[in-house]
Length: 263
Image (cartoon, rainbow, N blue to C red; front, side, top):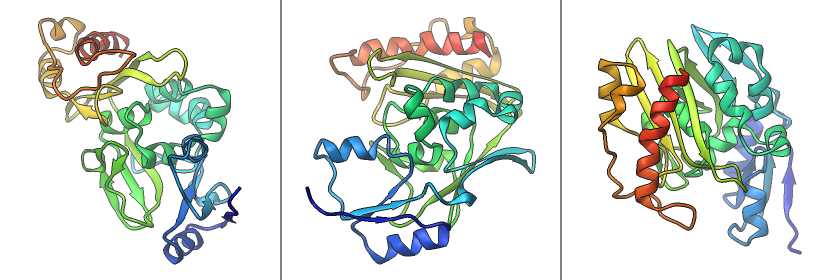
């Protein structure tokens, strides 16, 4: 087995310095995506900068009327948080539905967002709630953060430090699970806010995306019936052994109706 470097910094500044000093090092958050990729030979690296010991990346708090979650906070912590359950219960339920207990107790919100798996759950919440991704360098609006398949707006060496979630009037997340992985074959996060309605979809395309036609219909009438008769085009959607693009397109409308009913 190839020898690897392993670093465990205790501050964001130290982690950033390590990553800047060696382009072949990878940041390690929860390891629930990067380690399997390494085992499968899909990833090559000289070593890891483990972020788990950085206290400033962890925790949940209210700040400026928004719910702020540190990038190193685990899914299990988000799911169990009294603040999250009180302010954005849909986000707590989403975190509770991710993977299994091992994944929820090791995986982190920052790691999930930086990885941007096309079927991950957190991107739907971040985009659906119009959250802001805070890094060690800047703030990035959700609409500008997700760029494509496993691609984000993050620059080399840039680390997510927290996510700022506005508090919605109503919100819900519903997903159709792939039974083995529990990833979303299709997942829909619907949020009604003072600024309008947002519908974010994960699992159906190369990365999370919004469906404007559903948003416009729900802005006029926030009921499941508002989605009747709306067809989402299958063009550009994922198609694999688990479901065709047409099937996923159909699920988007079905799950949006369920999410609105739940909200």
